[in-house]
Length: 613
Ligand code: GCW
Image (cartoon, rainbow, N blue to C red):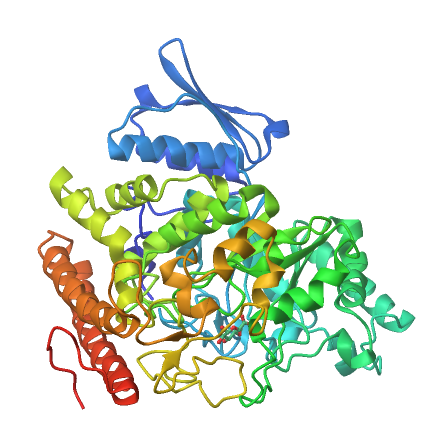
């Protein structure tokens, strides 16, 4: 692998290869600033331990002065470099991240594959070992620090053998990777298998068993000896067939607290995922509603988790669909530390072939939930070994923006997109406007093309790409649209599953009445007849047809606009290839979905367009 050819996705101005042996973020900051600024403009650096993650930029005697803590000084260095690359004036003053933990969760397996990975194999695993190109890992560190991301959870939450060994016989490999990322202020976290003591001769993994507790305590001691700044564990338990405390009749709080106590002496955090539901549901059962599961399990446990446990909640009650309401759990756990989990890997949102910029989604989530309801921001990574890191060159925006929103959840999607575009491409103003405006529209276009009005799940099972309206209809995953010849959607009000009652009063009232329910969530909350009339006078069936026709046309328009931009050749080739796929995909979605509803309902398109039969 030739590391020199891997430029950091949005820091193309930083052409100096990072040297080996940088000892700390402070040294990295010095190196980056020295390589970037001419000697007479070099900012003065003041290291102030107590400032931690934060930094301050001032002008003193005509010279810039950057003060910052251990990691803050590096974040400040990148902030200075950004303004210089963008040609904007330096923002004087202080800056500190809103969320102390900005965690990138990587679903990398040790054979090198990446679960839901669309950018090539793992950057650090291969053949059952931690294996990487150190120069490329340094470039990665540069990118992550440049975005403000400070924790990397390196292995899949589905812990497949031999990933257990990362905290045992392969701990030295883990420590070596941690050392590579330390100069960038990026700390390692690992996903652990709750049942690990079982395979280590303890005979049980019962969290209340003293031998189990002792085993984890000893394990923690060894981990922190090897990696003193280790961040903690992430755990997927009793979810999608993963082991967990339920097997021993214990609650999630008992399971999480046991692990949390083992790592507490070292300041470790225990991220416990709330993605728990019955994945063996009978589709005939219309009363069980998967969307209700997490709230039902965790709400009664509010206040029962130890202080170093963070309950990590996916942004919606399902699973990163193209549109979901916010998870009611985020609004219901005042006595529990929460992390908000989003997914940069575009599992259901185009798989880094189709464009789906997530910033408007996150803006909506933070505006609805309130940034203070959660204490950490985590994202499933979209990184891989592809030369451009994220598969689609534009998908790098999501990674960059994740860091920006973790630093400042009040971020404006347009401002962040513009900053990314300027750092990445340095286009002329009108071209930059074109790029930014289409990226910001890309989510709503993708939504129209695929499952609009809150439907979700109409994808090909397993791969989760491409249209398949009944793909998940008769499965065990709790994922139904219940379309018949008269109506479509799931009634989640009190006449149905009553999921809506899990929301605080104001949101409950908004969602439970189809007249006030936001249109893009209508069929998530309601089961409606095809002939029901929407706010703008169109019938529901007409709206289903129109969105798919419009979505395709808007995709064509987007392709024309984006392909007219003067992008660097290697990016242009990628964008062209992927845009072609996106167009084919949008056409397929339009025709399959419209045909599906046409066959069921027998209703013609009011505008007489061709629906394939
Ligand atoms: O979205 C689903 C994915 C699984 C994933 C799971 C999870 C890691 O299809 O691949 O498993 O979510 O979040 O745990």
